[in-house]
Length: 329
Image (cartoon, rainbow, N blue to C red; front, side, top):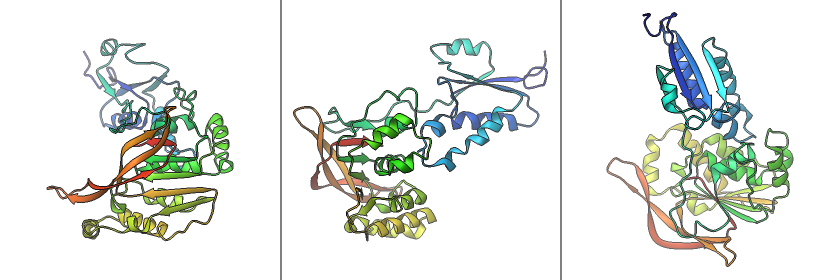
C-alpha cells in the first residue's frame, strides 16, 4: 500500500470551520514539502471566512481584504469547500473519522462571557459580538433586535471589538451606507436615538487593548466629540515605570488618549467618552425590567509577582445613567 502523503495516497484532512484559522491551517498543510494533501473544509454557514466576513467592522474594508489570501488557498488543486454542513448534526465526527486521516477543528468560541454582576438579566444588556454579527449580516443574527431608541449606551471592554461597537453606534449612517453593512442594520442605525456612548476599561491608558489606528479613528469621526477625563488619562506610577519597556504601539496609544483628554465638548450630535480604571459592579433596572444605569467601582493597578499590572477594586464608587449595555469582555 502506498505511503500516506504520497501522490497515490494523499493525506486526507478535514478542517471543520472556514474562518481564518481554518484557511491558515490549510495553507500550512499545502506548504509542507514532499507531502500530497487533500483538504476538505466544512462550514456550518453557507459561506466561508468566519470572523473576517462577520466580525470585522464594515467600515474597515482593508482588513477584510485578507480574504484574497484565502481565495488563493481555496484554488489549490487539493482543496474543497463544503458549506451549509453542520458537523455533529449533518455529519458526525465518527463518520468523518472513516474518511480522513486527520480532523482539524477551527470553530472558535461560540458563546460570550456574561458580566458577573447583579442586573445582567435586565433587557438592554447585549453581547458585543452579537451586535457585530448583526450589523455584518450574519444569518444567525439578522433577525435580532437591538433597542436603539435609547440615548445612552455603555460598552464594557476596551479592545478593538469594543471600539468597533462604539464607533458604529455614533458614526454617521450616510458614511456607513458606503460600506457593506447589512441593509437592515443601516436602516436601524438611521433611526437610532443613541447620543452618548461610554467605553469602559478596567485598566489604564497604557494597558488599553485597542490598536493605535482604531484609537486615532475615534478622533476623526464626523459629528462626534471624543473625550477622555483628564485625570484618567494620566498614568499612575506603575504605568509610567512600565513605559520604559513599552512597544511603539503602547506609546502611541497613550499619546492619542492624552490628546483625547485635551478635547472639550463642542456640542456635536454624538459624544463618545472613554473611561479608564473602572469596572461595573451592578446594572440597575426599572420596574419594566429595562437597563437604566450602572454602578462602577474605581480600580487601581498593582504589580503581580510576574510583573504584570492588574486592576483591583478600591472603595470608590459612582453611578452612571445608561440605557444599553454591550459587553465585550
